Image 1 (cartoon, rainbow, N blue to C red):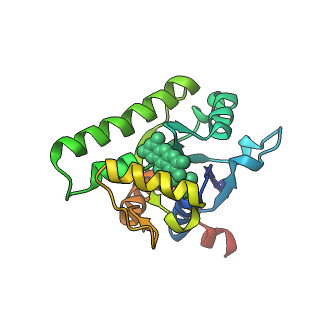
Image 2 (image 1 turned 180 degrees about the horizontal axis):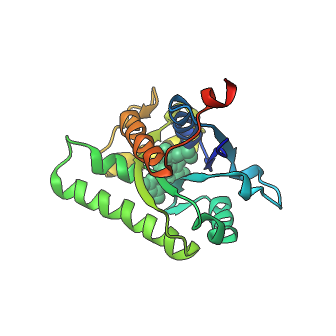
Image 3 (image 1 turned 90 degrees about the horizontal axis):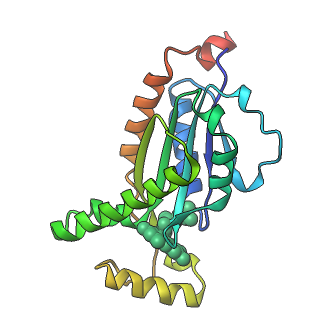
Length: 199
Ligand SMILES: Cc1cc2nc3c(=O)[nH]c(=O)nc-3n(C[C@H](O)[C@H](O)[C@H](O)COP(=O)(O)O)c2cc1C
């Protein structure tokens, strides 16, 4: 029986958890096992040996990824480099980069921002994942407190984004994530499936 795939995430407002759970469901649809783990609750002695591959997802706040992910990757960079891995960086910069309604120069600037934040994370951790993907996050106005809603509305306005604070705005391309899982699973290699194990 093949070991499960680790889907490790860090989040502030919950979008990256949704992304991690979506990735895990997509992996399971391939007949493989996936464990979703919140990096904020990891204890010492993490059982890395019990995973065949890892997807690590983190979101960006103030230009940086969550510190618990930075710490985990730094602590486990050797183990991570021995298995197939993918890093997902969730941000609104990537949402801007993917926004077909935006002028090309704005999209290019947003894409450069998303890339810069990923490069900074990789430089800080020393990790070289097998694949890297910038993922569009969400503007969760209804989940923010009053002050944060005000700040995010101003930031969004300056970036040419929506200022409709009456609802949340999700930009994540779920189909693109499924495609990433398809490619990742193919990379992980022919696997013993859950069904094989059960029968
Ligand atoms: C306080 C705050 C700061 C943020 N800073 C950035 C940023 O510097 N760059 C960026 O591209 N997105 C930024 N974002 C957008 C988040 O990356 C985006 O909302 C993402 O979906 C959050 O994921 P999470 O819900 O998993 O925390 C920020 C969001 C908030 C609320």
